Length: 253
Image 1 (cartoon, rainbow, N blue to C red):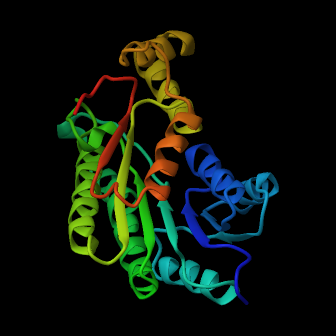
Image 2: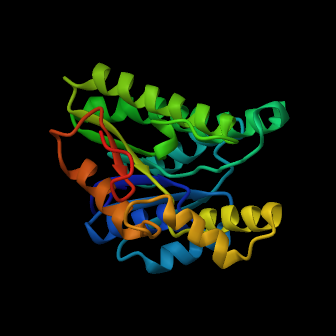
């Protein structure tokens, strides 16, 4: 049946940035398909949304998952007009200790899954003559830091996908952009803080402060600040092929 508004699909919608993006899109009148691995988290997100939602608990890296979630949204409503790829994970290790397993995990979730989602979403957008894709990447897409080779490579890669797709679709009414946050106050950063504390012997407060000091405004980025950048990409057809950094001014471009 036709959706009561345009259709958006958000991966990583169970918590953090993905949840906040889904809630914002719902408030803006979108019917939102919510995708992540954990159904209970998605149900919590759905309860926060103002409009219709579709809960799709899938591992977006698994075979066939991308086709399943897009087909479900199309069957329930209509083709996706906005795709926001928020699903992602981090992993740290010295270069020489970076295992094939860690490499494959980072590439599968941070690069291959967004690519597959974009590839699946684009035909419907082109047919309608409008659409927006936003990938939540990282400042790691634009610089190199020690001990995160696999993560950084995956984020550099997905930024390449964004830029090439944007150039290819520029005349089709479809925009493709990336939002590149620094350290954001999310469960993912909480995990990073735990790892730093465990490996260095610092307290969690000391580890958190270390991350805060990496950003010029001496604090973690808020989820709402990232969502504002995502929404700007969604609503502004003149913004295309960009990697918008949200880190308080640390990485100037």
